[in-house]
Image (cartoon, rainbow, N blue to C red; front, top):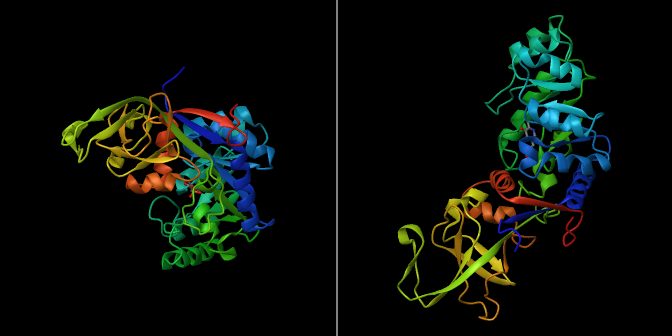
Length: 360
Ligand SMILES: *Cc1c(COP(=O)(O)O)cnc(C)c1O
């Protein structure tokens, strides 16, 4: 056992396949941009962008200037769109490295303009976060500022295809775009919005989650290929008497003589504290419930129903696998899959390969 760190295995081939799935959903007329913000959702920006570029992805969205610089060092010719906007002090970096700034206020638009930086207009259509309002867009359009490279907005409720807010936001988006020249490309949706249909796709979709194998809209059957696998070392196996409790605050009490496994993964690796007594891991093909609280470096699993010969320290316990998707863990942690992925990716050692079972 060289390292007892839990391992997040990342299948780069599956990421390429998921890009192809999205392309087939939107058709050839729609550009598919990859969203690699937050270190590619915790999976590692530098490792992710090469395989995407290889299969023809030419535009990428990042969170901030730091990520934009990291990406530019890997790929010199692609479009890099920076979601966090632009400040005057960043203007030189944007211009010299040809970054595109997403502008959400008139001030940002004017900073981009005076620095001769290409920009995207982010419109507020109902998300209620950042974005230009109707009157602000009108003012910009009637000024002598340069037009945007493209215009975008973001749906608040795309995960719920029944939500009326999706149509409302789309209609507002169309209405606001009417103030702009018709040739300016438009972009409204992220992963979940793709399945709302062609009248949501416009010229460009911005895809993060789906590339990483997440099925935010709960499509059934799930068209996306699983990308990540999380496993951790079983470092000890011990017997617990009936009536004994396990872990901090004794939140699990053995109702039978229990064979307990101690696993080297805890909340510092991104395993959510809330999965205690809720998540079921897998060991040697058997179910192994997480029992007692998750601590910083460890958690415990119940191995009582696993054949004694199998339940030995040194094996690997699976927490995320093709049969136990990230969404599964997210539900037992009362969170969304994206949050889990970002935390686990940041907390575990990552291994990359081009197909499951073939580490590199
Ligand atoms: C994060 C983000 C995306 C990608 O979202 P997914 O649902 O993960 O595909 C797209 N657009 C904007 C503005 C974002 O912030």
